Image (tube, rainbow, N blue to C red; front, side):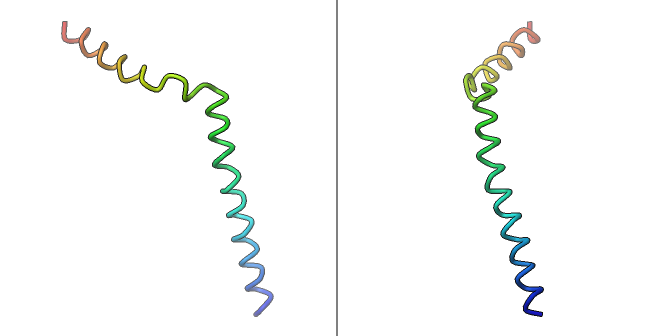
Length: 55
């Protein structure tokens, strides 16, 4: 029974480490792909599209 507990903790530890590494990797990927360069543009593009549709 004690061996089963340690295996469970090892699985949780590995899963936590994977999640911990995925998050900064995704942030780095987004930064390198330029996802954070112009975050305001989409807002203004939507407003312009609505004004064009209203005309």
